[in-house]
Each structure stands twice: as structure tokens, then as C-alpha cells.
Image (cartoon, rainbow, N blue to C red; front, side, top):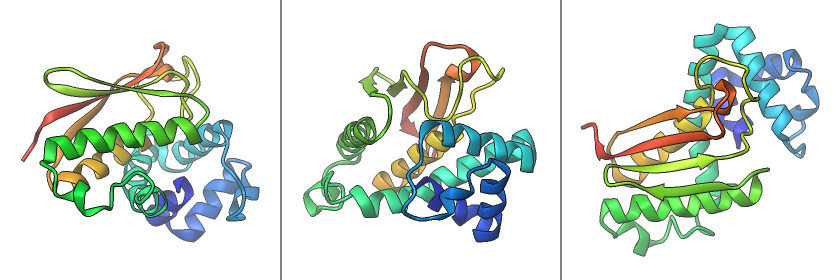
Amino acid sequence: MVLDGVQEIVGRVGLVAVLNLANLSHLSDPAAALKGTDLRALRRALEDLYGRRGGRGVLLRSGRAAFRPFLDHFGEELHLTQTEFRLQPAPVRIQAGLEAITGVLSQVGSSPLDFTETPDAWVWTQRGCWWCHPSESQEPVCQFAVGLLQEYLNWASGKVYHVEETACKGTGAEACVFHISKHPLD
């Protein structure tokens, strides 16, 4: 799903170029599985190829583009595509979906995710991150996750919500923390 999202943004030739630059050409095979170290290498290659800001922009857009393949793969299992889910009020739908997505990503990923709630935000915490390496950056680098969350929120509610990575292991924090405003921007 990650590579599907990247390919949607940079095209097939661009994806192959990024994989080659990252020494990940074996991932051109659709049956190949991504590992956490592969994701970090992919992020670095995108930053090398497109510049730091451009690479992170590609990752943000790739995260958005990856939501559709994620939904196709996990939507029924998570009950996201069922009529009962779609008929719930938007706040209930958003929270239930965030909890379900947190659960499945904890299972398929290399580290558990935590989902909590504050009066104004939903908070997604990832103690072991797939995208960054401890203390490698001065600013958060997990834009793929931000994009995936943004697209889910838009799909679930038809509105745009502010999603911000407020702490990142890449900057030396203990965890990557994403704050999702409960109030839509529009």
C-alpha cells in the first residue's frame, strides 16, 4: 500500500528511480514485503531526489493516495465499508475508524500504536516508528502517516481536519505523536 501511494504520486518510472536510489530495487516485485528499515530508506531517497521539502511533500501526498488501497484491503475487515458505519454521525464514525485503523496498523506494523482522546483532539502515538530513526532530524518527518490520516478523515466525514505530528522520534522524542483536531477546518 505504501508503494502504491508513492507510485500514484511519482509514477511507475519515478518509483523505480526512488527504489534504485534507496537500494531497494527488490521491492519492484509486488510480492516483496516492506520492512521498517525499507521505509526509512525510501523516505531518505525521496528527500535526496526531490529535496527535503519536496520529498516530504511527496510522502504527504503518497499517504493520502495510499488510503484507497488501504481501504480496499482492510475496509470490510474493519467494517469501514458497511452501511451501518457510514450512517453513524461523523464524530462517531471518525473515532471508530481511527480506533480500527490503529488496531490493524499495530498488528501489521512492527510497533504498537496507541489511540487516545482529549477534549479537542484525537491523539495517535507510535512508540516505534517505521519512517524515522531516532535523532536524525530537527523537524518531524512522518508525513506519510499525516497524509494517510488526513485522507481517512476526509473520506469519513467529507471535511478537512488539521493533522499535525507534534513529536517525532526523528527529532529525539520518545514517540511519534499525531494530534488530530476534532474541529474541521471548513
